[in-house]
Image 1 (cartoon, one colour):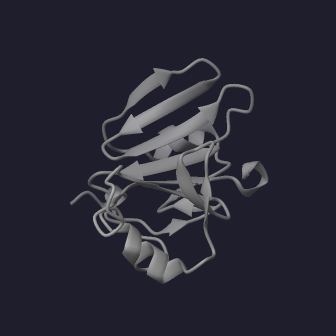
Image 2: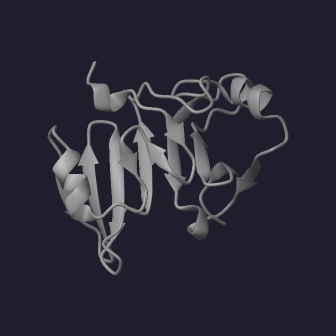
Image 3: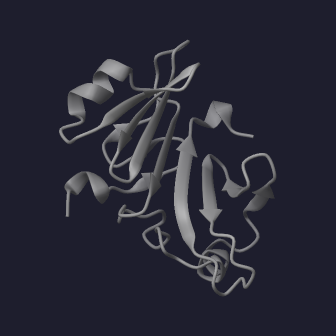
Length: 137
């Protein structure tokens, strides 16, 4: 497995070696794997296998990182892509809340996205996103 797919997730700070607040130039300097650049209006998105980096054109600073699919890194050494809703809830307790704007469960700078299964025991975590703490809702 590629090492960039296995870094620790720290809300409001980093995913592996990729730090929120770094410039687009700094990000490109450390990405040593294939990526695509998507111009999404006010934001440039660097898309790689299972990781997306969001950089607003206005600031040119990394504001958000999203991981999915093959990403094997974790949050708190136990929460990773593929965990069930019940497993994450048991680990976090009542510390998180549902964010209707994002359609995710949120906890201080980190968002957890689950599939749309109706049974809570079957919902699985398919995406984790972190953002700079000064931009959190």
